[in-house]
Image (cartoon, rainbow, N blue to C red; front, side):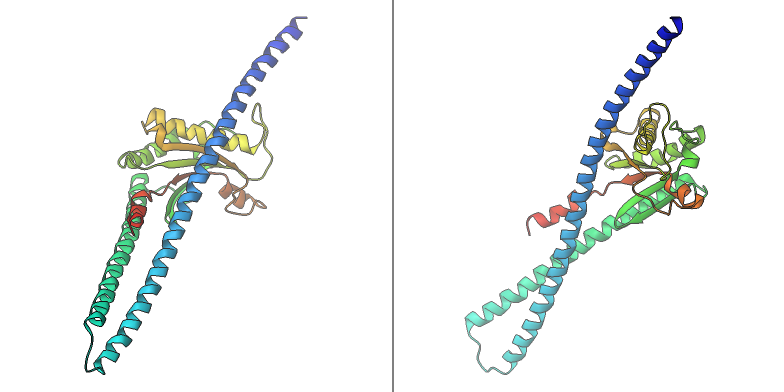
Length: 273
């Protein structure tokens, strides 16, 4: 009877912990969905802007060609009316305005790219000479990514951040705190091997718990604003290498910090055009 009572209490405690983790997992999945929606919207806005710049360049080339032909025709004319002269003047002014607008867009894009490169250089300088297999910082399609291997961050099958990894996260936090407007998402990734341990049901659970562990370190130990952070778990479904060998699986087991692009100021240039 005593053994049955103890087993029942243990079961109820585990059931309660499982229910709590399930609610946390549900909330985190909802946060991930919102973050993915925001990232997709920003990517679409940038794509629309690139298309608009290309269209304007094409229109500008067309106008220049037409005006060149018009000016050549004028050279053969002995008389030009006042209305014709005004029309040509207005057309030339429009070309100048479009030139200035395109230059402003290109300048804004160049400025954003230079800020990203400065951020990458600052992160690399702060982290120092860590092995590239442990941490990789790069810019891809205008977004800054910091990939940290699970070998550095966690012990096998665990989601508690190691002391050495906490020091590395502190260096990353120092750079991010210097730019308080930056928003970022921490993504947990696993390989494809099945995982189940305790209350963790699968790789989804493991990846989410690892992401939230990193978030808590950045918030509680290094003081980053929680409103500027999001945690998400990708499980095994966004690999960067094959899961058919040990080397590929090691690359897939990672935690990624995604610096979300700040495109609001850039797209203000389009509002009144």
